[in-house]
Length: 240
Ligand SMILES: *Cc1c(COP(=O)(O)O)cnc(C)c1O
Image (cartoon, rainbow, N blue to C red; front, side, top):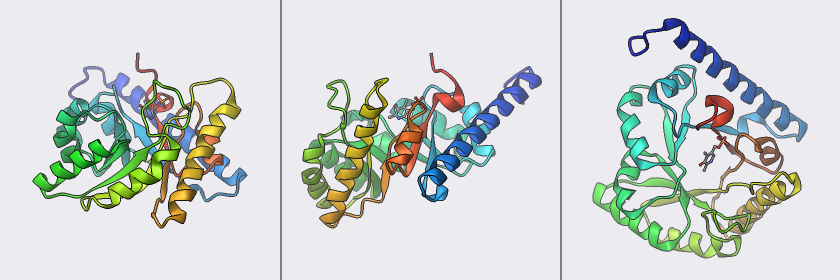
């Protein structure tokens, strides 16, 4: 490849990414089978923040189709290098008002809506671009003040509000499990997200996706009903 003078190094990186994707996919399969779930009901989203476009290209060439970015600037910068490869991009980070325009231009889904003002601003920008977009509500299931997300108790009201916004299709919920070595606490976060899904479904909202589980906790998330695991470091290595 032209952008690397060392072809051997490129092949090594490619092999490494391939092996790691296979390993994660095998683990998803095993975990799903062990809890009587259909492995095909769980999507793998590759978290590509801080990952250079040429490595993401490798993953897409290997057949991956779903990636996630948490910064609009990166989303925009990589778009040009990736657009010839079929894929879907989800935005999974904090979305600032002045970045909404580009976020909805380059992402297919916003996973991080957690307040009415943000939803309303996204609606307005979608009207300007004459577009619609899929969206998830981000829920803070751990109670950690450092984490984004609306509280589980307020999710229904936000869903009701989003329903009045005709450009936003609410199809899922997203959460980040607590950062803890106590796996029961991690599991409780995922269980809370599932409970919120059930409440919303009982009120008639077609919430199909539960985006939960990262490199360190995706097996637990699958056991608790995740339909989309978001994996970064376990595939692309540490981001330092
Ligand atoms: C970075 C990030 C991930 C991936 O985390 P890893 O531990 O690298 O797998 C998942 N979700 C969100 C929202 C992230 O910001």
